[in-house]
Image 1 (cartoon, protein in one colour):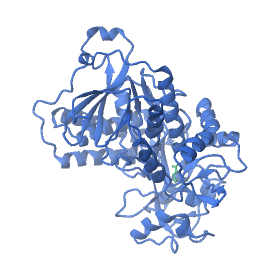
Image 2 (tube, rainbow, N blue to C red):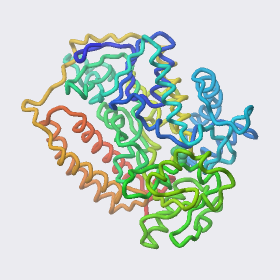
Image 3 (tube, helix red, strand yellow):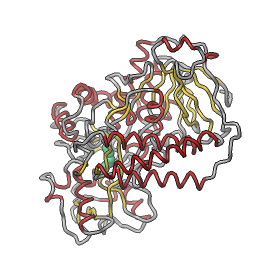
Length: 523
Ligand code: SIN
């Protein structure tokens, strides 16, 4: 593929984590031409890559009905029952077919003949398949290896989606206003050349992941700034439930580390949260103690930290582990040791961190959004599976199941675009293309992230949210101006997406006065 210009494909997939990769694999198998883009320089870089705990399946004494009950209990009852039914009913067979048979994923085993099922909070059964504590990394690497074998798949790293291409919005033809709005691909920045490609596709799948990075503390990698939500919103797709931002209770507290996750499976294997004085406290909040749903554990930690004016609590594994910690959690062990914490000898200092967005682009059971021919899968979408709070380890499975479903739907209805590319206007570059000053970009990000953490975080109030709205609205005007004058660069594009997403979350939180699941608003 030449470096820049105009391109046509059958399916454009934005994002390459488990959801995008699963969609790409299904479309590739049917012979469609697929372009997958990721803004990262490495194809594997994604939220999926960092997923430690695992992927939910069905355990030994388990049943889809039990899984459904757990998902709905964690979600505070506002889940979409049809979506939950699909995940619980189709999940295990999809894992068996794609991950185990097709991709040969070497899930951990308790005996040579039996898979090992881990426990996580909110699950009534041990049912989480894992590869020690590096589940996502293995799955992601394997997906990329397999996709590279398909000649009809083009994998483009270092390409940032700038905007979805939609008609009538980007059309030169005035008559296009009489047609149903429809997505036709995207404008995509080549991070190296700084030029914008126009990729035309009759079908676009957004698999751009979540938005944890709009918060000061997050378990997400730096790139999780919510590009997909922002682009879909600007293109006119429906976005729902953005107030339900899940905070993971335990990320490592350390000066030199940005949000390293201490997996919930650590508590699943018996670890307990303790105050700095060594007192357990979860029994005071929920009868499930340390394995209560995530939102409750995060709020309890927040409360304990506030009451004792402390910046962290402890997670004590060593006092409870009846197994070889180094063997079960090698990645967590090695990472903590690098920062001077030996988890086989001492408790781990932890704090909650923004982890997962339960809302997103509203989609149906096939991943179809409200904008024609735009699909969304994985964290960027809202199937309704998670309701107001996601049950642990359901996200990889949702991405896998809906990624495949989206492409199945496209393959079965495939209709090549009846669009004349000359009808679409080229990307407008600003006249002066001013050099960007990284100090300005960094400061704007700091403002977004601290505003979100302090005013739209674990515990919200109407006053705090109103302050967030005012501050972010003001910042948006500044960023828009900056964007219109600056040289095209992925950092500027990211900032424009980021401020949009911060506002989407804040407006959604302000519009919902009822505390539910991950949205907690104090009077
Ligand atoms: C974890 O390992 O605690 C994260 C799993 C998840 O968020 O589903």
